[in-house]
Length: 156
Image (cartoon, rainbow, N blue to C red; front, side, top):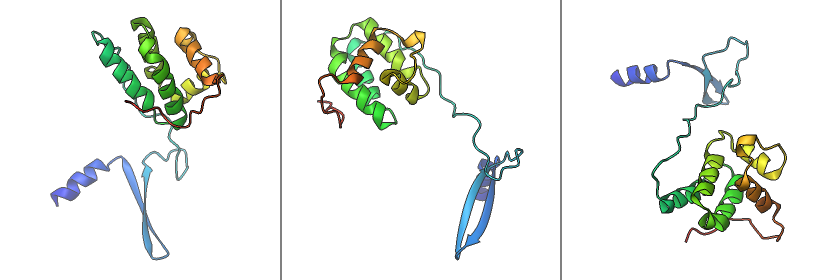
């Protein structure tokens, strides 16, 4: 009894539809907002993403390790490949200022597709990200040496 109370409280904003189809019970959870008349309303907003807070007093070694990890774990394969190979090649030679620019580039935009489109030249790069690191990333994406970049580089 107590468990069903907790469960119903968790699902309060969600409406549940149950129907039978070929002897299988199917559950569909819908948003409770069907004011548009749609049975399956599309989401109106993107999920909330916490604001980026630049880390102060972070050692260069720790910052490089964090940026290498974040370059590899992007959530989309295209940027994972582009940014991991970029970081593997250029991160060790970056100054603290350049690492800060790279940190802001990969952590401020909330949509990884924006980074991809800017780096590939499909869209104009916003002024705040149009800097020496973005220019270096754009050159890296052009792959003038025709390197094979089908997997992320090894960490060690």
